[in-house]
Image (cartoon, rainbow, N blue to C red):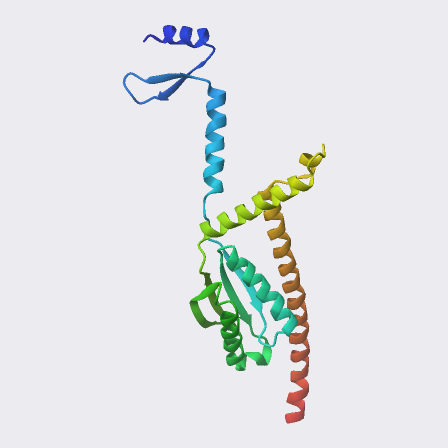
Amino acid sequence: MPLAKALELAQEYDLDLVEVAATARPPVCKLMDYGKFKYESAMKAREARKNQAHTVIKEMKLRPKIDPHDYDTKKGHVVRFLKQGDKVKITIMFRGREQSRPELGFRLLQRLANDVQDLGFVESSAKQDGRNMIMVLGPHKKKTEAMAEARALADARKAERQGRNTGSDDADDLELDDDAALEAENAAAEAEAEEAEGEEDEAEDGEDIAADAEKPAEVAQDA
């Protein structure tokens, strides 16, 4: 069909003339609503991204002589990560004289692996890496299954909120998007974990400085 005729048809039906196969001979064009086509393509891409499962490796740092309360907090984060279908890299950080007691870190990693064995397994056994000891935990649950469960839970919560807010004109304005709310909750928990780790690192640095200050006195005493 001549180009002029195709343009005339597009104008007659209030559509767009879109080239869909530029390399063909002759080139292939199609009459369509290009705005609607772009919108539908964007929605399909968004849905595809929503269903994608990205493998994420989270990290949790511990000290060999960690406080019981801190251990429970860190373990709680590891449990949450495994429930989300993510892998977790556990790092035991040794400072000063602790480096001569690697068995403390090994026992702590074994304890943590046993505590979360219902949710994950040891994917990479404990190994020494410089001043640190590292172990990787893998989830029993696949990422896609975790995402499906999280989405179902979010839908249930949304339905519950809608049931409580029936008859309220402002209910829709007050409701958050479920995916955004879930991401915000995860981000807040991770920020809390990072803040706790930062405070722990500062305390560790103070201990290292104190240990280094003791060394000259010990040398003088030996002399």
